[in-house]
Amino acid sequence: MKKILCLTALFALISCPINAQSVQKEHWGTVKGKEVSLYTVTNKNGMKMQIMNLGCIITSLFVPDKNEKLEDVVLGFNNLQDYLKGHPSFGTTVGRYANRIKNAQFVMNDSVYKLASNEENTAIHGGNEFRDAVWDAIIVSNENGEGLRFHYLSPDGSFGYPGNLDVTITYLLNDDNAIYATFEAETDKDTHVSITNHSYFNLNGAKELIYDHKVIVDADTYTEFGKDITPTGNLPALKGTAWDLSTMTRLGDKISDIPLNGYHHCYVLNKEDGEMKKAAEVIEPNSGRKLEVFTTQPGITVYASNGLDNITGKYGIAYTPHMALCLETQDLPDAVNHPNFPSTLLKPGEKYFETVIYDFGVVE
Image 1 (cartoon, rainbow, N blue to C red):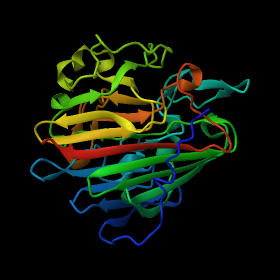
Image 2: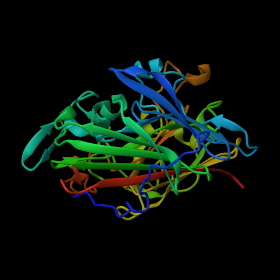
Image 3: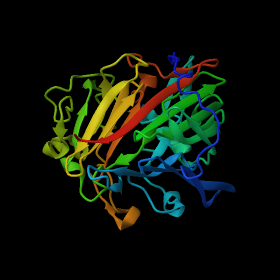
Protein backbone atom coordinates (compact mmCIF):
# COMPACT_ATOMS: atom_id res chain seq x y z
CA MET A 1 0.00 0.00 0.00
CA LYS A 2 1.03 3.61 -0.42
CA LYS A 3 3.24 4.76 2.44
CA ILE A 4 1.66 7.58 4.45
CA LEU A 5 4.19 10.35 4.90
CA CYS A 6 4.43 12.06 8.25
CA LEU A 7 5.01 15.54 6.86
CA THR A 8 1.55 16.97 7.41
CA ALA A 9 2.50 19.05 10.43
CA LEU A 10 5.57 20.42 8.68
CA PHE A 11 3.62 21.61 5.66
CA ALA A 12 0.31 22.43 7.40
CA LEU A 13 -1.25 25.41 5.68
CA ILE A 14 -3.12 28.27 7.27
CA SER A 15 -5.22 30.93 5.68
CA CYS A 16 -3.84 34.22 6.90
CA PRO A 17 -3.51 37.85 5.84
CA ILE A 18 -1.35 38.11 2.73
CA ASN A 19 0.60 41.11 1.55
CA ALA A 20 -1.58 42.49 -1.23
CA GLN A 21 1.51 43.03 -3.36
CA SER A 22 2.80 39.45 -3.04
CA VAL A 23 -0.23 37.55 -4.40
CA GLN A 24 -2.39 39.11 -7.07
CA LYS A 25 -5.37 37.67 -8.93
CA GLU A 26 -6.72 38.52 -12.36
CA HIS A 27 -9.58 37.15 -14.41
CA TRP A 28 -8.31 35.10 -17.36
CA GLY A 29 -11.57 33.72 -18.75
CA THR A 30 -14.27 31.13 -18.27
CA VAL A 31 -14.25 27.37 -18.91
CA LYS A 32 -17.43 25.28 -18.68
CA GLY A 33 -19.12 28.09 -16.77
CA LYS A 34 -16.32 28.34 -14.19
CA GLU A 35 -14.02 31.30 -13.71
CA VAL A 36 -10.36 30.81 -14.58
CA SER A 37 -8.01 33.11 -12.70
CA LEU A 38 -4.31 33.80 -13.10
CA TYR A 39 -2.44 34.31 -9.84
CA THR A 40 0.91 36.09 -9.58
CA VAL A 41 3.03 35.36 -6.51
CA THR A 42 6.04 37.65 -5.99
CA ASN A 43 8.78 37.32 -3.37
CA LYS A 44 11.06 40.00 -1.92
CA ASN A 45 13.69 39.30 -4.61
CA GLY A 46 11.24 40.02 -7.42
CA MET A 47 10.96 36.37 -8.46
CA LYS A 48 7.47 35.70 -9.78
CA MET A 49 5.42 32.53 -10.09
CA GLN A 50 2.29 32.79 -12.24
CA ILE A 51 -0.19 29.96 -11.91
CA MET A 52 -3.82 29.48 -12.92
CA ASN A 53 -6.60 27.32 -11.52
CA LEU A 54 -7.16 25.57 -14.84
CA GLY A 55 -5.02 22.47 -14.38
CA CYS A 56 -3.03 24.13 -11.57
CA ILE A 57 -0.76 25.19 -14.43
CA ILE A 58 2.41 27.17 -13.77
CA THR A 59 2.30 29.56 -16.71
CA SER A 60 5.44 31.60 -15.97
CA LEU A 61 8.44 31.65 -13.63
CA PHE A 62 10.51 34.82 -13.63
CA VAL A 63 13.84 33.88 -12.04
CA PRO A 64 16.97 36.05 -11.55
CA ASP A 65 20.24 35.19 -13.28
CA LYS A 66 23.79 35.82 -12.03
CA ASN A 67 23.31 39.53 -12.76
CA GLU A 68 19.91 39.59 -11.01
CA LYS A 69 18.13 39.91 -14.36
CA LEU A 70 14.69 38.29 -14.31
CA GLU A 71 13.67 36.00 -17.17
CA ASP A 72 10.84 33.53 -17.68
CA VAL A 73 12.29 30.01 -17.44
CA VAL A 74 9.25 27.84 -18.29
CA LEU A 75 7.39 27.27 -21.55
CA GLY A 76 3.73 28.12 -21.97
CA PHE A 77 1.28 30.53 -23.54
CA ASN A 78 0.31 34.18 -23.10
CA ASN A 79 -3.41 33.56 -22.80
CA LEU A 80 -6.06 31.04 -21.79
CA GLN A 81 -7.31 30.47 -25.32
CA ASP A 82 -4.03 28.90 -26.43
CA TYR A 83 -4.08 26.49 -23.49
CA LEU A 84 -7.62 25.43 -24.43
CA LYS A 85 -6.48 24.39 -27.92
CA GLY A 86 -4.54 21.51 -26.38
CA HIS A 87 -0.87 21.33 -25.46
CA PRO A 88 1.81 18.89 -24.26
CA SER A 89 1.09 19.54 -20.56
CA PHE A 90 2.96 22.84 -20.28
CA GLY A 91 3.27 23.52 -16.52
CA THR A 92 0.42 21.15 -15.73
CA THR A 93 -0.24 19.32 -12.48
CA VAL A 94 -0.69 15.77 -13.77
CA GLY A 95 -3.05 13.12 -12.34
CA ARG A 96 -4.61 10.88 -11.41
CA TYR A 97 -1.64 8.91 -12.66
CA ALA A 98 1.48 10.48 -14.12
CA ASN A 99 3.21 8.93 -17.11
CA ARG A 100 2.05 5.73 -18.83
CA ILE A 101 -0.02 2.66 -17.92
CA LYS A 102 0.42 -0.23 -20.34
CA ASN A 103 -2.65 -1.41 -22.25
CA ALA A 104 -4.64 1.26 -20.37
CA GLN A 105 -5.60 -1.17 -17.63
CA PHE A 106 -4.64 -2.72 -14.32
CA VAL A 107 -5.88 -5.54 -12.10
CA MET A 108 -6.80 -4.78 -8.50
CA ASN A 109 -8.72 -6.90 -5.99
CA ASP A 110 -9.38 -9.50 -8.73
CA SER A 111 -11.07 -6.91 -10.95
CA VAL A 112 -9.79 -5.48 -14.24
CA TYR A 113 -10.02 -1.70 -14.52
CA LYS A 114 -10.12 -0.35 -18.07
CA LEU A 115 -8.80 3.18 -18.32
CA ALA A 116 -9.30 5.88 -20.92
CA SER A 117 -6.68 5.30 -23.61
CA ASN A 118 -5.20 8.50 -25.00
CA GLU A 119 -1.96 7.34 -26.64
CA GLU A 120 -2.63 4.39 -28.93
CA ASN A 121 -3.34 1.59 -26.44
CA THR A 122 -1.82 3.41 -23.48
CA ALA A 123 -3.22 5.60 -20.72
CA ILE A 124 -0.93 8.58 -20.21
CA HIS A 125 -1.16 11.32 -17.58
CA GLY A 126 -4.56 10.16 -16.31
CA GLY A 127 -6.23 11.09 -19.58
CA ASN A 128 -5.33 14.75 -18.86
CA GLU A 129 -8.14 14.92 -16.32
CA PHE A 130 -6.29 17.22 -13.93
CA ARG A 131 -4.99 19.39 -16.79
CA ASP A 132 -8.47 20.13 -18.11
CA ALA A 133 -10.24 20.64 -14.76
CA VAL A 134 -10.99 24.03 -13.23
CA TRP A 135 -9.86 23.79 -9.61
CA ASP A 136 -11.10 25.71 -6.59
CA ALA A 137 -8.34 28.00 -5.31
CA ILE A 138 -7.53 29.96 -2.16
CA ILE A 139 -4.51 32.07 -1.24
CA VAL A 140 -2.49 30.51 1.61
CA SER A 141 0.73 31.04 3.52
CA ASN A 142 3.03 29.22 5.92
CA GLU A 143 6.70 29.11 6.87
CA ASN A 144 7.53 27.72 3.41
CA GLY A 145 6.15 30.68 1.51
CA GLU A 146 3.03 32.22 0.04
CA GLY A 147 0.93 30.90 -2.78
CA LEU A 148 -2.14 28.90 -3.72
CA ARG A 149 -3.96 25.83 -2.50
CA PHE A 150 -6.11 24.12 -5.14
CA HIS A 151 -8.86 21.57 -4.61
CA TYR A 152 -10.60 19.14 -6.97
CA LEU A 153 -12.82 16.08 -6.53
CA SER A 154 -12.26 13.43 -9.18
CA PRO A 155 -15.45 11.33 -9.22
CA ASP A 156 -15.57 7.56 -8.90
CA GLY A 157 -15.01 5.98 -12.31
CA SER A 158 -13.52 9.08 -13.88
CA PHE A 159 -11.36 8.01 -16.83
CA GLY A 160 -11.77 4.45 -15.52
CA TYR A 161 -10.17 4.95 -12.10
CA PRO A 162 -12.08 3.70 -9.05
CA GLY A 163 -12.97 5.82 -6.06
CA ASN A 164 -13.91 9.41 -5.39
CA LEU A 165 -10.47 11.00 -5.16
CA ASP A 166 -10.33 14.17 -3.09
CA VAL A 167 -7.23 16.10 -4.21
CA THR A 168 -5.43 19.14 -2.77
CA ILE A 169 -2.44 20.70 -4.54
CA THR A 170 -0.37 23.50 -3.04
CA TYR A 171 2.29 25.72 -4.63
CA LEU A 172 4.24 28.13 -2.42
CA LEU A 173 7.03 30.56 -3.30
CA ASN A 174 9.45 31.69 -0.57
CA ASP A 175 12.05 34.43 -0.27
CA ASP A 176 14.89 31.97 -0.91
CA ASN A 177 13.60 31.55 -4.49
CA ALA A 178 12.27 28.05 -3.83
CA ILE A 179 8.88 26.65 -4.82
CA TYR A 180 7.31 24.11 -2.47
CA ALA A 181 4.71 21.89 -4.12
CA THR A 182 2.65 19.38 -2.17
CA PHE A 183 0.32 16.76 -3.65
CA GLU A 184 -2.37 15.35 -1.34
CA ALA A 185 -5.20 12.91 -1.99
CA GLU A 186 -7.73 10.71 -0.17
CA THR A 187 -10.09 8.09 -1.58
CA ASP A 188 -13.20 6.16 -0.61
CA LYS A 189 -12.19 3.05 -2.62
CA ASP A 190 -8.92 1.31 -3.31
CA THR A 191 -7.24 3.11 -6.20
CA HIS A 192 -3.86 4.08 -7.62
CA VAL A 193 -2.36 7.57 -7.50
CA SER A 194 0.78 9.25 -8.86
CA ILE A 195 0.87 13.04 -9.21
CA THR A 196 3.54 15.27 -10.72
CA ASN A 197 4.22 18.72 -12.11
CA HIS A 198 5.01 18.86 -15.82
CA SER A 199 6.81 22.18 -16.24
CA TYR A 200 9.16 22.60 -19.20
CA PHE A 201 12.28 24.37 -17.92
CA ASN A 202 14.76 26.38 -19.97
CA LEU A 203 17.07 28.25 -17.64
CA ASN A 204 18.33 30.60 -20.35
CA GLY A 205 14.85 31.99 -20.93
CA ALA A 206 14.29 29.90 -24.07
CA LYS A 207 16.72 32.01 -26.05
CA GLU A 208 18.57 28.85 -27.04
CA LEU A 209 18.02 25.09 -26.94
CA ILE A 210 19.00 23.18 -23.79
CA TYR A 211 22.25 21.69 -25.11
CA ASP A 212 24.44 23.79 -22.77
CA HIS A 213 22.36 22.85 -19.71
CA LYS A 214 24.33 20.60 -17.38
CA VAL A 215 22.38 17.98 -15.42
CA ILE A 216 23.04 15.45 -12.69
CA VAL A 217 20.47 12.97 -11.34
CA ASP A 218 21.01 10.90 -8.20
CA ALA A 219 20.11 7.57 -9.78
CA ASP A 220 21.98 4.41 -10.74
CA THR A 221 19.06 2.57 -12.41
CA TYR A 222 16.09 3.42 -14.62
CA THR A 223 12.81 1.91 -15.77
CA GLU A 224 13.56 0.10 -19.01
CA PHE A 225 10.79 0.50 -21.58
CA GLY A 226 9.67 -1.27 -24.73
CA LYS A 227 8.46 -0.04 -28.10
CA ASP A 228 5.30 1.43 -26.57
CA ILE A 229 7.45 3.42 -24.07
CA THR A 230 5.90 1.55 -21.12
CA PRO A 231 8.15 -0.21 -18.60
CA THR A 232 9.17 -3.82 -19.10
CA GLY A 233 9.53 -4.27 -15.34
CA ASN A 234 13.32 -4.38 -15.49
CA LEU A 235 15.41 -1.78 -13.65
CA PRO A 236 18.80 -1.97 -15.39
CA ALA A 237 21.91 0.00 -14.51
CA LEU A 238 22.45 3.38 -16.14
CA LYS A 239 26.21 3.00 -16.33
CA GLY A 240 27.33 2.63 -19.93
CA THR A 241 24.13 4.08 -21.42
CA ALA A 242 23.96 7.35 -23.34
CA TRP A 243 21.28 8.59 -20.91
CA ASP A 244 23.34 8.09 -17.74
CA LEU A 245 23.17 11.33 -15.73
CA SER A 246 24.87 10.11 -12.56
CA THR A 247 27.66 12.64 -13.15
CA MET A 248 27.22 16.25 -14.26
CA THR A 249 26.50 16.02 -18.01
CA ARG A 250 26.12 18.63 -20.73
CA LEU A 251 22.85 17.62 -22.41
CA GLY A 252 24.03 18.31 -25.94
CA ASP A 253 26.96 15.91 -25.69
CA LYS A 254 24.97 12.68 -26.00
CA ILE A 255 21.39 13.66 -26.77
CA SER A 256 21.71 12.60 -30.41
CA ASP A 257 22.81 9.11 -29.32
CA ILE A 258 19.60 8.43 -27.37
CA PRO A 259 16.55 6.67 -28.88
CA LEU A 260 13.31 8.65 -29.26
CA ASN A 261 15.31 11.77 -30.13
CA GLY A 262 16.66 12.35 -26.64
CA TYR A 263 16.17 11.93 -22.92
CA HIS A 264 12.82 10.33 -22.11
CA HIS A 265 13.60 8.10 -19.15
CA CYS A 266 12.36 7.60 -15.61
CA TYR A 267 15.32 7.49 -13.24
CA VAL A 268 14.96 5.43 -10.05
CA LEU A 269 16.31 7.68 -7.32
CA ASN A 270 18.88 6.52 -4.79
CA LYS A 271 16.68 7.02 -1.75
CA GLU A 272 14.30 5.35 0.65
CA ASP A 273 10.58 5.39 -0.08
CA GLY A 274 9.15 8.66 1.26
CA GLU A 275 12.55 10.17 2.08
CA MET A 276 12.96 13.83 1.16
CA LYS A 277 16.20 14.04 -0.81
CA LYS A 278 17.86 15.96 -3.59
CA ALA A 279 17.02 14.24 -6.88
CA ALA A 280 18.57 16.42 -9.56
CA GLU A 281 20.52 19.59 -10.27
CA VAL A 282 20.56 21.67 -13.45
CA ILE A 283 23.07 24.41 -14.28
CA GLU A 284 22.82 26.79 -17.24
CA PRO A 285 26.31 28.30 -17.52
CA ASN A 286 25.49 31.33 -19.68
CA SER A 287 22.90 32.79 -17.31
CA GLY A 288 24.46 31.22 -14.23
CA ARG A 289 21.05 29.94 -13.13
CA LYS A 290 20.87 26.75 -11.11
CA LEU A 291 17.88 24.57 -10.28
CA GLU A 292 17.96 21.91 -7.55
CA VAL A 293 15.05 19.48 -7.30
CA PHE A 294 14.19 17.74 -4.02
CA THR A 295 11.39 15.18 -3.65
CA THR A 296 9.80 12.50 -1.49
CA GLN A 297 8.87 10.54 -4.62
CA PRO A 298 10.82 7.48 -5.84
CA GLY A 299 11.49 8.52 -9.43
CA ILE A 300 12.07 11.43 -11.77
CA THR A 301 11.35 11.43 -15.48
CA VAL A 302 13.79 13.55 -17.45
CA TYR A 303 12.25 14.55 -20.77
CA ALA A 304 14.11 16.75 -23.26
CA SER A 305 10.93 17.97 -25.01
CA ASN A 306 11.78 15.67 -27.92
CA GLY A 307 8.31 15.88 -29.42
CA LEU A 308 7.80 19.64 -29.47
CA ASP A 309 6.97 20.89 -32.94
CA ASN A 310 4.86 23.56 -34.65
CA ILE A 311 3.96 25.32 -31.41
CA THR A 312 4.31 29.06 -30.94
CA GLY A 313 4.57 29.93 -27.27
CA LYS A 314 5.02 32.99 -25.13
CA TYR A 315 6.82 35.99 -26.60
CA GLY A 316 6.33 34.54 -30.09
CA ILE A 317 8.99 31.88 -29.55
CA ALA A 318 8.75 28.82 -31.80
CA TYR A 319 8.95 25.73 -29.61
CA THR A 320 11.00 22.97 -31.20
CA PRO A 321 12.56 19.71 -29.97
CA HIS A 322 15.07 20.21 -27.15
CA MET A 323 13.71 23.63 -26.28
CA ALA A 324 13.20 22.66 -22.64
CA LEU A 325 13.67 20.01 -19.98
CA CYS A 326 10.93 18.39 -17.90
CA LEU A 327 11.89 17.10 -14.44
CA GLU A 328 8.82 15.10 -13.44
CA THR A 329 9.19 13.74 -9.91
CA GLN A 330 6.76 10.86 -9.64
CA ASP A 331 6.05 7.26 -8.76
CA LEU A 332 7.46 4.85 -11.29
CA PRO A 333 5.42 4.64 -14.50
CA ASP A 334 3.13 1.62 -14.85
CA ALA A 335 3.81 0.61 -11.24
CA VAL A 336 0.21 -0.63 -11.16
CA ASN A 337 1.34 -3.56 -13.34
CA HIS A 338 4.74 -4.26 -11.74
CA PRO A 339 4.75 -5.63 -8.18
CA ASN A 340 8.52 -5.10 -7.96
CA PHE A 341 8.03 -1.31 -8.24
CA PRO A 342 7.12 0.81 -5.19
CA SER A 343 3.37 0.57 -4.75
CA THR A 344 1.03 3.36 -5.82
CA LEU A 345 -2.00 1.80 -4.09
CA LEU A 346 -4.06 4.18 -1.98
CA LYS A 347 -6.73 2.82 0.36
CA PRO A 348 -9.60 4.49 2.21
CA GLY A 349 -8.36 6.01 5.45
CA GLU A 350 -4.88 6.60 4.05
CA LYS A 351 -3.49 9.85 2.73
CA TYR A 352 -1.36 10.33 -0.35
CA PHE A 353 1.14 13.06 0.50
CA GLU A 354 4.17 13.87 -1.64
CA THR A 355 6.37 16.94 -1.87
CA VAL A 356 8.68 18.42 -4.50
CA ILE A 357 10.86 21.50 -4.08
CA TYR A 358 12.22 23.51 -7.00
CA ASP A 359 15.07 25.53 -5.50
CA PHE A 360 16.46 28.22 -7.81
CA GLY A 361 19.81 29.89 -7.37
CA VAL A 362 22.95 30.93 -9.22
CA VAL A 363 26.32 29.30 -9.61
CA GLU A 364 28.81 30.78 -7.17
